Image (cartoon, rainbow, N blue to C red):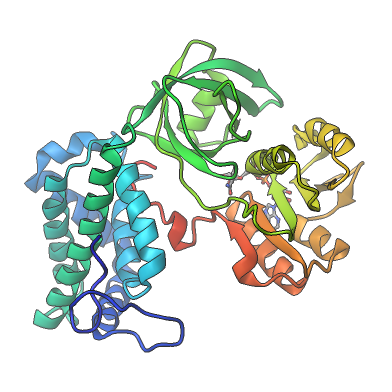
Length: 399
Ligand SMILES: NC(=O)C1=CN([C@@H]2O[C@H](COP(=O)(O)OP(=O)(O)OC[C@H]3O[C@@H](n4cnc5c(N)ncnc54)[C@H](O)[C@@H]3O)[C@@H](O)[C@H]2O)C=CC1
């Protein structure tokens, strides 16, 4: 496997916490700081150049590019920014390379993207750009793309690029939340707590990520909880239009919000709205292992009526003495804790012997991380898929 280049441009020793950044990382970050004020323009220029110089690539991207704009380019920049953080970046890029197979990405496409990236940087970072910056960016991009290419080639030997899956059950839970059950056309290996990108027949090449709402089942069926959000084409179609017999496409499983079953720590799980889906999978996962392990679930919603999965959790709580479930309702609460999830977590803490699992809207996750840390959980023991982190930077077209 290719490693990220280090200070001397050779294979990376990489950046360890507390070490000084490499000269390449310094010049890359300087370039990024220079382009930041014009981020939208840089992105538009990058895609315009890509599609004018390489028109055959256009068909791999969704027809409307608005949601896409921040993705491929933004994530490339994000990866470059973390170029010294070898371990995190390599894992992430390998996952990304595998995930790109579903878009039809080939090794031959990478030089075209690299060439347009360099051209955009040269144009929008004139003060930093020069021989030294160009060499650093070429080294970084070469390493990034090689890791992705190698991971995709390796994955091709063992897994399909995507799975087709037929909707076999579709259950409306509220006016805007549906539970969708699908049957993949071939075995789909994943772990509780993970998610996958999904493409619907109504919006080709618009991929959206959804967490699995069940742990792997003997019948191979997969479940998702989908909330129709106002401008969400894919989520609205899945909630209001999809029916049994429709066929969707799924990318490979992603994400590291999984349980370490070698540990005995308690599990503090905080799920907001449909963010409760992967937490249900985690509860089932622990139940199947048959080990007594304390699990505390906080299920948050704006109103009582949005607690669409509470009965399922209360039934799980009744069956499993190690599980405790607390509803948390932000407005007009008539049951459970009245307020926001982070307040509830603090109120019932401290949680020094627990690992934290967070799932829900980004603001909720951001505030809950702070709440968990102040309630005694070290940050390294908190897992989530929040898009602000490198692990979910959304590098993929249409993800
Ligand atoms: N793996 C994951 O992280 C998953 C994330 N999601 C995300 O969950 C979200 C669900 O969205 P909605 O239903 O619109 O959420 P919502 O607006 O209904 O809020 C859900 C919960 O988060 C709390 N919350 C919202 N903003 C908060 C803030 N600023 N501080 C503290 N708590 C806050 C609410 O009080 C409520 O308990 C989507 O963004 C979806 O992408 C869904 C499934 C899995």
